[in-house]
Structure formats: C-alpha cells, structure tokens
Amino acid sequence: MDRLPFPFNPYPAGRGLLRLAGGLLHLVRLGALMVALSLSVSSYRRQETRHAVLRQLVRATLPLLSWFMVLSALVSLVLIRIVVATAASYGLSQYAIEVLVRTLVLELIPLYAALFVAVRHTMPDAQQVRSLLARRRQAVADPHALAMVALALFPRALASGFAVLLLAGLAGVTALVLAYLTVYGFSPWGLPAYTHAVGGIFSPAVGLIFTFKTGLFALAVAVVPLAAAARPDAAGRFRRQSDMAAFARLFSALLLIEVGSLLGNYA
Image (cartoon, rainbow, N blue to C red; front, side, top):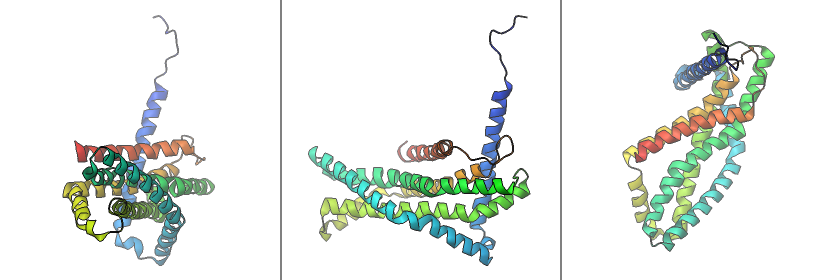
C-alpha cells in the first residue's frame, strides 16, 4: 500500500470535536444550575448570599450606568436624526417612527447593552474567577464540584443578567423619549398619535419575542463567560484565556439569538 504524500492523523480533529461537545455540555449544565438557583427561593434565605447578590448587583450596574446612558443617548439621538431627516427627504415621514422603534429599540439597544455589560464587567470578572480557581486548584469535573462552583458564581451571574436587563430597559425608554422630542418637539399634542404608533408595533407576538430575546441576551452574558472561566483546559489547569476568544464565543451566542429573533419577527 502506497504511503500518503502527507501525514494524516484523524485524532486531533476528533479530540477537538469532543472538547467542543464537552464545552457545550458544560455550558448547558452550568447555565441550567444558574437558572435553577436564580428561581429558587432557598437561594436567597442565607444572609451571606443576599449580601453577596446585592454587592454584585451594585458592582455590575452602578459603574456602568452613567457611561452607558450617555453613550446610548448620543448614539440614539444621532440615529434618530438620520432616520427622520432621510424619511422627510423622501416624503416618508409617517414611517420614521416605525423604522426607529423596530431598528433601534427592538434590535440595536438590547444587543448593545449585552455587549457593553459583557466587555466592561462580565469578561473581566470571568478572568478574575479563573485566576481564583487557578489559585485554589479547584476541579469541576464531577457534578458535585460543578454545583459548588455554580453556587459560588451565582451572585456574579445574576448581577450580570440584571445589568443587561436594566440597561436595555433604560436605554429603550430613553430612545423612545428622544424619538418623540425629535419628531414632535415639546408639544403634548403628538402624544396620542405617537403612543398609537408605538403600541401598534409592539404586538403580542413582537413583545413576546422581544422579551424572550432580551432575556436570552442576559442569560448568555451571565453564563457564557463564567462557564468558560470555570472549565479547565486540556491540561486540567486554569490558565488565563484569550480575551478575543472569549468575546468571539459570547458574540457567536448573541448572534444566534439575534438571528432567531429576526426570523421570528420577519420570517
């Protein structure tokens, strides 16, 4: 039998697929544990847990709130002026509000809030968690150890998810107010027409998809970076991970959620 002109070894590819499957299973298990802990009343009975949750909520929201609201208001105002001016130039001013709400409030703001919280809080926090696990040499291979890790990460994950929901909600309300002021000014006479137009966009199906998508964004930001930080590498060690790899992993999850919501709204 003739030898191949190049070395062929199928095992590295197989090991890569197995590690990918193991990472997905680890993510699903840890995410399920996080959701179960957040919905369980017993998780908040201990005073230490309540204090840890409150401390993490402050850490995740207070430093980000002012910067995010300023940047979100500026970006929203620029986009609103562009859309309103473009619609007026083509004689389509009656569609400006619908375009703004569908693109800015429904699609861009939740994604922007998720990325902002992930980059400014969750990913640096995940690196700190990984450094802590490396110092403790804590293994998470068996389910009992994974449950203990999930209990330790629960306040951080809950705070990250809450930050995404809070910032997305505040930025959405701010964008709606800025859109009204840009179109109608400070006159109250445009309020009935504006609320009717916005309410017509938020049908039950659109509202349900928007709520579900924002919740999945919060869950992805809360779980994906921390799950990767709590999983050892092939050598069983908790070495520092690449920030670009962590961001690509999280962005892929957010992109899949966004594509699913677009299919649900417009397919």
